[in-house]
Length: 69
Image (cartoon, rainbow, N blue to C red):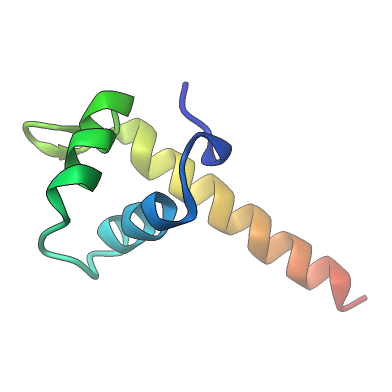
């Protein structure tokens, strides 16, 4: 299974943008890399891609909130 640290910061930004429907298209090299990692298929983003982004963003939010206490 792919994790956040398997990607560059640029790849991660594109993945988040795609999951949040903030991008209609992506650079060909990013598309090829996501396909290679199994994050992108013929029907768009995989469930693994969506779950990864959701998990990471929730963890970031949790860490920020814990820092406030």
